[in-house]
Image 1 (cartoon, rainbow, N blue to C red):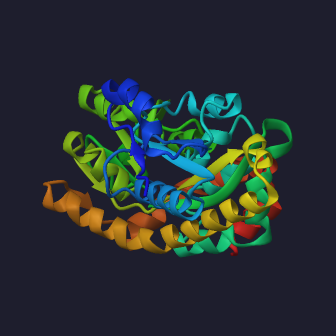
Image 2: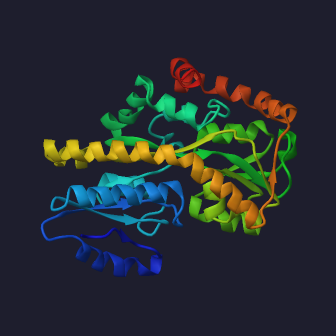
Length: 330
């Protein structure tokens, strides 16, 4: 049985590219899955590997998936272009990356719209959430296969952040999301968009003072090493769009496409069910490794929520009030 091909380092990429096909059987179609996350325990890494294993086993002789993690094939600034060009067939970028294609995915970025991951998962199973999977198909050729939850986000900085005013004047790394930028601005701080692979170095050298992420990202990328502390704000969801191109999907036979999508659905459900336990484990891993976590009092959390309320109203016309209401009320 063939194994997943993992390109582990940039230096090894050329070697991997020439030898990975040896793991695929003759006549199988090679499908490249590129993502930017490293380590072995991150929810995206586990989900990507599980999907590849299942396709390689259940569609043996038809498709062979090779997984390229940790930006070894394409970084997050190039991967969408690579998908359109057919240089890669599968991605799992953050939902925050699609602002230039549609403002509707901004609903996932609204601060404090979801109480927890269970709330977010319920929304993705509604008609409104499912419709968003094909939101970009007509004009960009992107098709969502599912939403991979990674956890709720927490702020870290080079000083403790107990109330929003503690962030005044600081520079925070954010993704290329207008909602995220306005959220940082609401704290009287400065948003700095940059690639995920650059964040550790930017924190270490002081190019930025803080960032926001899940326990898994903070732990696997070692952000806690170069930050004073992390505050358990639980303010925003980080989720990925497990996606492909409509061109790739349409190139499959009806039977193969149905089987491929069925596997994607099953892996997505399994991945999302396991995220909470992984997030809790990585929170403990941060503490064991010497990181510091600040817990908010109810009064402090209420101050955060009140500070972020205007962000919802600011993006209501772009995202759509009905979609915001559907997400909040799921």
